[in-house]
Amino acid sequence: MHMRFVFAAALLIGGLVSCVPPMESAPITAQEDALTVQDVLQIIRGANLFEHETFDGNDRTCATCHVGQDGFALSIERVQAEWALDPSASLFRAPDSDSLDGASYDMLREDGLVRVHVTLAPNVRVLDPVDGVNVQIRPDGRYIVAMRRATPSSVNSALTQHLMWDGREGASLSHQAGSAISEHAGGRAPTQDEADAIAVFQRTLFSSPQLARYAYTGIDPTLPRGRTASERRGRAFFESGPLSGSAGTHGLCATCHSGPMLNRTNAFNPGDPPDLAFSGNRTSEFNSAGLPTHTYEITAAADIVNDNPLVGPPGVVLWPAGTVFHTTTPDPGALVVDTDPSDGDDDPSNPCISVTACFVVPGTAIVFHRIPTLWGIRHTAPYFHDNSAATLEDAAAHYVDFFGPTRASMLAQADAMEAIGQIEIAAALRDQAAALVITEQDVLDIAAFMRLL
Ligand code: HEC
Ligand code: HEC
Image 1 (cartoon, rainbow, N blue to C red):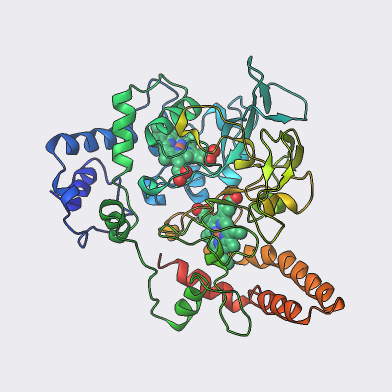
Image 2: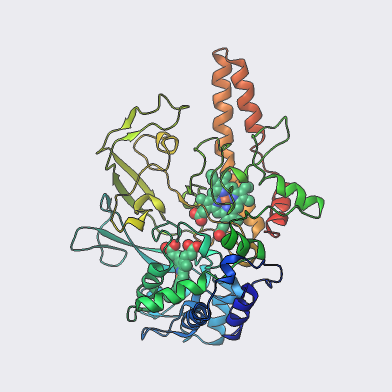
């Protein structure tokens, strides 16, 4: 028994996996051999539930938003085509209407964003009025904030440790399925069996044979080599190495999109330690989608100690428990939730992704999101949690503005070092800053390479 059969089974259900390349080269492994008829039946059941089951709710199914032809995500074109075909289609339901009353859907039709209600960790407050719609308080005092977010793909979700843009579902696809139904469909809760079957089905969705092989055998996927000169130049941005203008190495994207899933920081990240699953790329700060903002107050639940030798002696308390951080943002991401729900506890949120991030402006929390994988990214436009980048070129161009301020501060630091006679440090900083430039040609090259992932 191997993957091809699994996919063939799923295909029978209704072309669900039509976007996924054929699995011809997926190797037959011990684990795949171990797939029983029972397993296959559960996958088929899960596929059916994903595609057709409404859970007695508002007629939506998982596939209403996770559309096979959109790489199991939701494109703005899809929303518009659905609307043109049938404005009463199940995509258009009150929770995602402009005023929650089902009267109009201008926002959804324009930006493709879906409403989600995020329950904030116990150490987070919202300083805006509790209006019962955008901001609510539960009887236990915890805040619930309505945000509008892009639908991420459920392809490769077997390989995702931090589900959702803010990571609040951890790695549990079964738990996430239950949350999705109550959030978007408003129906009955799924039985544990149903939730498990949906999870098992999603675990069979991979963007390429390499990714399936990684899931089943642990053999790391490797970056495609690139055929054209442009693709190969684009690849260089994803090769881990020191940022150096003089050496001509600029693994800029790799500083956050590293590791087998291209979703971890690496050792050359100038701001954050390696292997972080969360980071900030200023999508929220730029807010080019024009989403409404709220002000969040996060109280550090424990002492925050230095973990970065560049900042000072490790272990020294930088922010004692009780220190209050503020941020005003359209989407606070991981800042306001428990990003490790696997222990079943409502742990406090952490105002610091890393000490460096928390050190920049004292008392101000920097917004960070789950670093998304980039495998299969060509199937799932538009990009970012607010759908603000329409194409891969737009996504790459976003980073011109992202790196601009970082580069400016490095150059200012270099000037300051030079002024106190630290010529070598100044030169090193300038060399690093030179690798932070992204030209128009780079944007095209990076996008060309990302189309191969
Ligand atoms: C109305 C549209 C809609 C429906 C219906 C829907 N989802 Fe989602 N899904 C979303 C959005 C939006 C997010 C991201 C929310 C967030 O990050 O807060 C999401 C996130 C996810 C993720 C996380 C992917 C990742 O990489 O983080 C998975 C898995 C998922 N949904 C599966 C499902 C399943 C299973 C169902 C059916 C039980 C379902 N969804 C129904 C819109 C939808
Ligand atoms: C400082 C860390 C960081 C760096 C450096 C970085 N990214 Fe990202 N990237 C992120 C984060 C975090 C997100 C999710 C942002 C969001 O939507 O809020 C993201 C999202 C993306 C997405 C959208 C994924 C999706 O599913 O919508 C693309 C494409 C992307 N990055 C490409 C790149 C490219 C190309 C580079 C190099 C030019 C790069 N990234 C450099 C952190 C980073």
